[in-house]
View 1 (cartoon, rainbow, N blue to C red):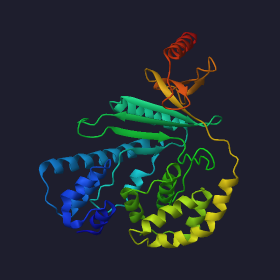
View 2 (cartoon, rainbow, N blue to C red):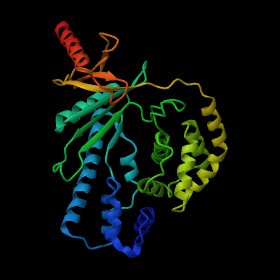
View 3 (cartoon, rainbow, N blue to C red):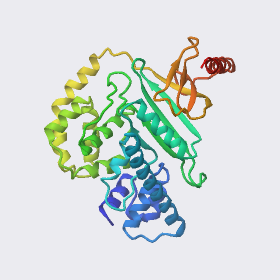
View 4 (tube, rainbow, N blue to C red):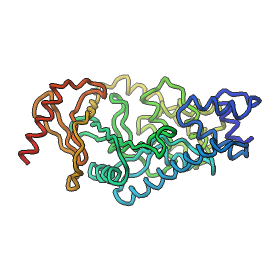
Length: 347
């Protein structure tokens, strides 16, 4: 049994004596975890039937498709992969990191919408979700979805693009649009950022394996701790590393964790004393898909009435609401569509 498979048995609270079938059964309770477990078992030479091999092949094809897509979009539009895909590069050969979503960050709105147009043009995109973070200036996030070849057996493809690499917590930790140039430090920052939104949730098996992949990288402890502190993530990084240390040797990250200790108190005090107004997020309710507006570099905000803020984008038009589940009444939708018609007529 490989080190990674033994770690999966521990993380999924499974007795190795119960065998790989029980490990896979436990993994199926978590989204995408079965693919990770299947790849670990395949690396160990565990015998499996054709259905399991086919499922693993499809998962590998999906990951390879995401990698090709990210490379193509980086060349053509300047967006680049963050979080999942770079972290997958630290996994041992053959061990498949789950990639439910391809996360991309764009240097500006123009690059973001160029990438969205490419995706809509080249793939059978069925859903395009849009949200704006902040007011003036605002950041844009777009998620596009399209079905897998077998949508009943496999999850849909999902690509998330944003102009804000690190969105913060909407209050005391601000948006930080850019990440550092060192990829392994960037990956550690991205892992710490995931702790902001759901700090009470215990890091899952994939997160622990992500940390395991970074333990052999050449971190400079004091510099890395200073960068994490500058990104306002010292407490989250410390919590993450403390949890991972309960499952594996931290290697070079042990010194990083020690260097983080002096940064914890100042950041916690800063947050306690912060008076920052909560950053508003507005979500788009789709009004209509449009013919692709190839000449548009950015989206456009219209406010024909105080309760009818509209977002016109190169691929679709939306009514903005304060939450994803805010009900849009027939009257409001009619008013929004009328405003769009008047805009169309005036142009």
